[in-house]
Amino acid sequence: MQAAYCTSCGIQKDKSAYWTPQMYFRHRNGSYEEVPHDGTVVYYLGRGVDKANIIPFPKGMRFLAGDSSARSYDAKTLTTGNVRPIADRTSFACLDASGPQPETPGLNQTSCSSGLRAQIHFQSCWDGIHLYKSDQSHVAYLSDIDNGVCPPGYPYLMPHLFIEIIYSVNNIDKSDGGYFVFANGDTTGYGFHGDFLNGWDMDVLAAAVKNCLNTENGEISSCPDLAASLDPNFSQNCPEQPPLVNETVHGLLTALPGCNPPTGGPNRAASIICPISPNLNAIPNQDYIVRSMSKPGDMKGNWTYLGCAQDPGISLRPLTGDSYTDNMGLTIEKCTQYCHDNGYAYAGMEYATQCYCGNILQQPIQDINYCSTQSYLICSGNSLQFCGAPSLQMVWQDTKYSGPPLKGIPVPGVTTLSLPSGGTATYGGCYRDPSGAKALGGTTLVSYTDGTGMTLESCAAFCVGKGYSLFGAEYARGKLICNFLTSS
Figure (tube, rainbow, N blue to C red):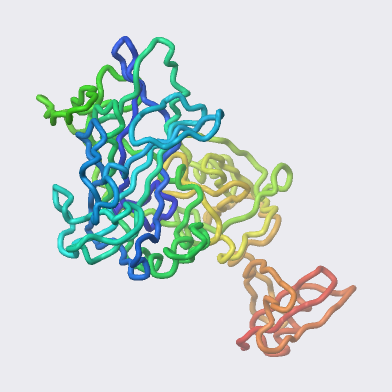
C-alpha cells in the first residue's frame, strides 16, 4: 500500500486501508439499490489507563473488529473483568430533525432525516507477537471497549480506532416497501464490522503518536507531523480506480455482491462460498509509480516549468490569450501543445481542467517557497500530474519559441539586463519584503532612495560598486535595497 501514489485519506502519508460493508436497500421487486454516503471518518484516540505509553501500530499490523456472521445481540461475551459486552463495539445513531435518538446496537430506526450513522470501535490491545491471526486473538478490547485496561497477555496499548459512516437512508425511495441490508447480507446491523490494514509511513505515525495523540486539540492541522502531508483536495486528487474484481457493486443490483443472501436473526449467518468466482480485470501494475510536483526548470519536450502565478481573475489573469476547459482529459502535454499550435510561448494550467495561453505574463511567478505551500489539483486527464489550483496557474514556457517578443512581467531566470560595468544580471523573481525582515537585508542593510531617477541600471551600478552580487528595486521611485550575504 505504501507503493500507491495517492490515498483518499487526507493525510497522504497514511495509506492504510479502512473498510466497512456498503449498505443497500432491497426493494420489494428484489432489486438492490446502493445507499449513498459521504465517506468514512476515522478517529485516532488516546484512550486507556496506560495511554501515556501508547505505541504506534506495528508495521504489517492488520485486524478486524466486529462479527460478520452475528445476527443478534451477544450479551454474554464480555470484556476483561466482565465490565461490558463486547457486542457494544458496534452501534447506530439515527440523526433526525425530531431530536436526538438513543444509540442502538442494531438497525432499530432507519428513517433518519439527516442520515443513519454506523459506528464501530476497534481493539486497542496487542499481544506483542502476532501481526495477524484469523481469529483476531492477537488483539483485544479495553475493559470498557473505548477506555480502561488491557487484559492479561496483551501488554501493548495501541491507538484506539473509531470509525463513523453516515448513510443517507432518507435519500432512498422506500414507498414500494423493502428493507436495508449490508453487503455481507446482514439485515440486523449486529453483523456490522470493519477492517484495518496498517499502511502508514511508520516514521510519520510514530511521531504523530508521540507528539499529538494525547493532546487536547484533535485537529489534524494542529499536528505538524500530520499537517505536513495533509492534502485538502484528497477526494479529487485520488479518484476511485478501476476495480480488480469484475463484479458490479454500484448502482442498482439484481443481487448482493459476493453471493451473500439477506439473512436476519437470531441465529448466526452461515458462511456462503460462491459457486463461481468472478473474473479479475486486467489492471496495469501501478506499484511504485511516482506522482511528483513539477519544479522550476523541469522539462516536458521543449517546455520548461517556470512556477506558479496567482490568478485574480478576468482581465488580471496571468495569461489572457486563447484558453479552453477539459473536465475529463486535461494534461500538461495537451495544454502546452494547444498553446504551441496557436502561436503562444506561455501555457498555464489551473483548477485541474483549465488551460490558458499567452505571450504576455501579467502576474509574477511566485517564489518557490510560496508555491510549495499551495494545494494543487491533479490534472483531469492524468492523475500523476498536477494542473494548478483554484485561482493559481502553473506556468510553462516554450524554450524553442520564435514568435513576436514576449511582454509583461519578467520571468525568473529568463530575463537578462546589461550592466553599466559590463556583463549581465539575471532576473531572480519577486520576493515579499515584510517590515523588519527585508528580502535583501543580510546582516547590514545597504540601500538608497531616488525619487526621480531610479532605474534598474542605476540600482545595479550602486550595488556592484558596493561589492554585492544581488540587487533589488522596490516601490518604483522609493527605496532601493541591494545588500546580500555574499559579494563579488
